[in-house]
Image 1 (cartoon, rainbow, N blue to C red):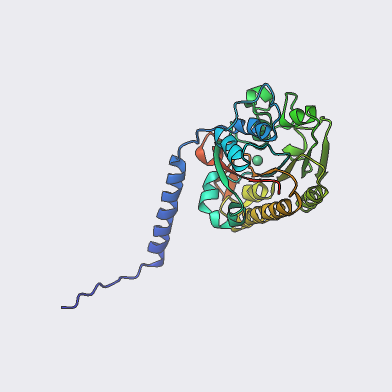
Image 2: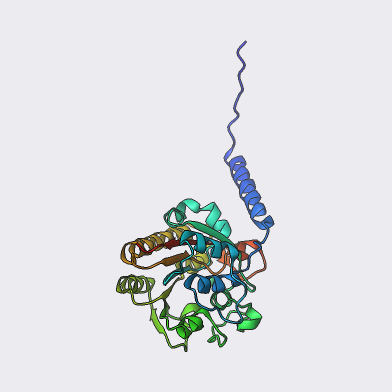
Length: 299
Ligand SMILES: [Zn+2]
């Protein structure tokens, strides 16, 4: 005898309820996520290790995972070029959930390193830690403010070793301010287009040993429209495509160098009332991030 199941169509209200439940469940999973073990303060010493220079005395121990990758991928050699792309506020949960939008960055990477950023999880505090290797109470930025950091940073280590670092960033952003007053070059522009055009020029010019490029587009749109808004997710894809372009240029124009390339954000983000976005709290969505790295051996 033929069995038959009658499918009762869901009403619009029932469908909406079902979707709401799914969204709630997904948020619950994100909230229950554990914090990553490794602190963002390990990045600075790993960058110094990659270049074979002495990290600052205040920097935490390096990331073993990143150091091992550098050793293995370059057969023990050191890099003479580092390119750090710093997109703002791309949290681990966004990275995992919308990995298809970041495909162009992900497919160009060889190493994924989960980090737990520092508190409060706001831009100057986190970049302060990323590039000094020190916790906020040591580097001195403990809230959303942008003074010049006085303690030793990766930029100071580089300068001491006779290397040339450069920061390329948007006007008034944290990266354009907190590492000023060093004997190095800074290129600060009002628009992200100018920032990225300068980064292209600098890659082709090939005279800097360490390049940090800041892009705040996802962060600013996420604050206004929410982390998962179509507007913010479009910016996420823009970040991946810009990074892919830099990566291609580096692979083609830095062939004589051993290079390390990184897609390295400062903190994550979460949704708040009114479909807006925020960060700064002691929660996995704001604290868990994933950096992407790849080395290019000289050919
Ligand atoms: Zn930020």
